[in-house]
Amino acid sequence: MSIFFSLFAGLGLFFIGIRLVSNNLRQVIGRRLRQLIARAVTGAGSLALFGLLAGAVMQSVNAVIHVLVSLVTAGAMDRKRAFPIIRWANIGTSLLVLVAAIDLHALALCLVGLTGIAYYQQIDQSTRWRHAVGALLGLGLLFLGTDFIKSGAALLRTEPWLRLHISELGLWLLPSFAIGAAVAWVAQSSTTVVVITMSLAAGGLISWNGGTMLVMGAGLGSAVSAWNLAGRLQGSARQLVLFQVLLRLQGLLLTFIFYACNRWLLDDPFNRLLDHFQLGLPARFAAFYMVVQLLSDLGSRTLEKPSLRWLEAWAAPSLQENLSKPHFVHDEALDEAETALLLADKEQQRLLACLPAYLDALRQDAPAALASADKRQAAESQVLQLCEQFLVELADRQRSRDVLERSMVLRDRNRLLGSLQESLAELHQSTRAVMSDPTVAQLLDHLVQSLHIVLETLAETAALAQPDAEELELLRSLTHDRSDLMDSIRRRLQGSDLEPGLRQAVFSATTVFERCVWLARRYVLLLDGPAASPDHPK
Image (cartoon, rainbow, N blue to C red):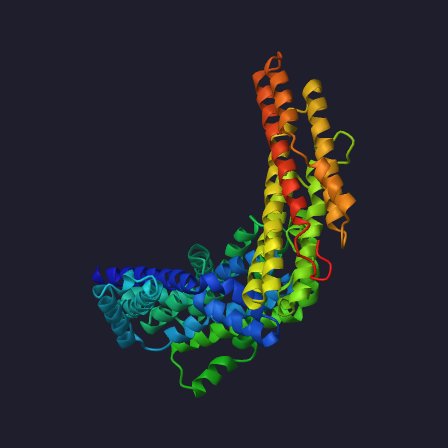
């Protein structure tokens, strides 16, 4: 019974180690990882390097895909550059398999001892070293768990009844394949299945044929876990996940062909090749897993064009995703201050021109809105966040007084745009439900039409290279203080026989309308700021 406890404890330590390594290393580099990937992955070499490192660090392709999804949906990376990273991340996860093929008993004990000393010295309480110590502990537990599994398996191989079942498992390949797929799906990692298979092989508990079926089944389990993730995503994010599913399935098909040809047609040349290197059975499984990964990569590269066409048709980018991507700002422009400021100004002009669309669903004479106000606000707020980061980075790189002043004006406009978007979405939410009442609808329609004119005029004036005094004066008159008018409307409604719910909705709408006009007036005042160029200030 103690043998089974040893195997069970080994599995527990292995799973804890995997989780500790993944979580702590992601915390160590998580704050900078996305920014580094977005900036550095410009060529084939950097794509491969980041994919390998991300897969090796996170030990989960799904975790890598999560990072890429956030970058692609935010517009920080083109989705076509994300596909090669997924390919290389799959190969990166197999680095743990190569490490597990080495006898690491002494290293595991040393790692656990070192982390024990670190905890005793309270180094784990340090903000700087806390996650590094946690990752070190996870690595030690991972190796120690692998060693426990190997030791328990070595003791079990002396049991005659177990040897009988092992020999049967080598004959019945389908159950082995199903077990590998199930464990990989539950553990969300095909690497876990391969390392456990290697540990069992080191103890003589599994044959070559049964082990290869476990490894191939792990590929199917990984594809199923990725498919489950795809169900919650849309557009380009869904494309990335489906690409991983296709990659796994293509690799699985090629691996079956390779296995069948190697075993039944060519008299096992793969094992004869490994005999020259005098590799044991665990190392042979590691080599076979590498072959599986390389065949997946080969299949993905061979069928890349039809696969991408299928992904485009199956998961086309949504309207909300298109709205969340910037049209002008990009990191390459940061090296030239004048260009960067001009592009930031253009991006803000574009977003300002989109503000009247928030009111389209409320106007009685307007066409149907392409996207709801909530979805539009959620998408365009991402663009504003990117603009803010862009302007902060520009101010850090270019420290001249002129650039700092103009970037501060643009940042103030950025914040006002965000407040306007939130207020318009709130106006849409509070008004839409009560537009069915004729009296309320007529009153609110007047407010909406008035605000629509204000926003359109503001956008047209802001788009001019140098608005004159008359245009600015018109904007100031359109955005004058409306508090007296709104108070009179609220006092009139207070004494009416309107239902309390409708009255409260109108009160909320007038308050938000008043706030929108005030924000627009603040934006008018900033049109005189030096945002576009020192030669013709706005």
